[in-house]
Length: 133
Image (cartoon, rainbow, N blue to C red):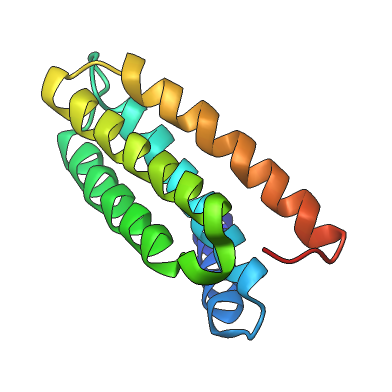
């Protein structure tokens, strides 16, 4: 096994371990990281000579699935306005993903990636401080 394969196997085990843990912050962090990785790969494969349609389509589908999972995790009773705002952000990201897929250009997805990156960074900071949502 080469080092790249080993690294991918390690990341996969790490993701599964965190997802199975009782720490919801860790699970959401993993989802955010995977979503942003997939959205970036989708964006890179939208246009140009090196674009890979198979990678683009897989990243597109996975991104939509992760956005759905993030929306499904929201607790509107406990989260109130924060949960509603996150739902709208995830919906915005979904719409930008769809628009970029239709147009074949990365401009709209870049806006969603930036917005989600800011939320992911805030989430990780909050998790390190032991905060709750």
